[in-house]
Length: 359
Image (tube, rainbow, N blue to C red; front, top):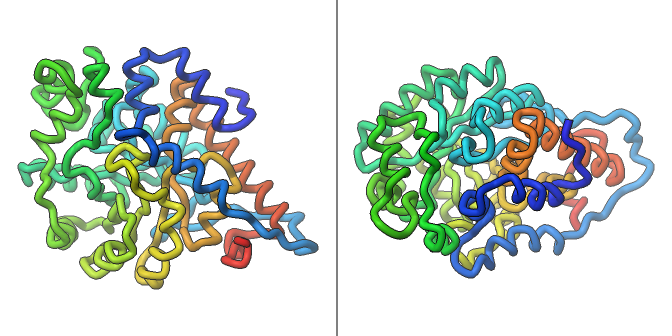
């Protein structure tokens, strides 16, 4: 299995395996990429205050997220196009995530179908990330299929009315490789990613043509009305929006800036976590993504009120380097770092990670 010193070490190794255009798509952010860098930097400004002699010989990292048991409080974030990294696409990531006992969140724009992902997940828990299309019939059908395939929650991404100013993708004239498909859609959707319109990013053009920029909070209620599954609203940074999400029927929110890929100059999610937890006030669950690379990051998020974190790019680097085994290695490494951080901080169980741990 892939040997990992730390999760940051994986990116330069994966870069040597990837076409430069595809590496830039995965690694890049929006605008000047200030927010992309801030997502990492903000974690380092939080300090932990450990407690001693707490009896940490026997530790448990198990918890629940939306009532689903997980082996440790880190989930795999929704990311499109796993086929850019490995021939087994999302099926490899889903198998690995299930084997490590946590939740895989499948993207609307996966390279294989949600049914294939469900099959690869087996009995493992899985969520479906949803973009709302201008053609609401497409969205309704995706929701129906997700429920039928055993996905247990919907993650409604709300921060992408249009694609962010991803200059690496524009410079590279981003196109999806010819051998890959959009697994959840007919061939015409795949063709638009292969060809695009002259210059620029084919993905940005697809988003502008297909995804509905007119969404409002009423659409959260609409989604709840057509879905038997709980809805998490992903892409929340303002505490007021977190409160509105709950008021309109969401089961929780994911504090996120889309990995720094949408609006540049916005705050890192970890800097907004505590006020968002206060705004939600126990009426739903709060999760967070954005720059998670260390077990200490996870500990900080839990101490500030998150139920769990979602991990993105390191999973794709592991997939690039060693397929499903690489993803398992990434998740095991993070789990082991969480375990060590808990022991050194004086926490024997997730329930013991409290606000007092943050200086």
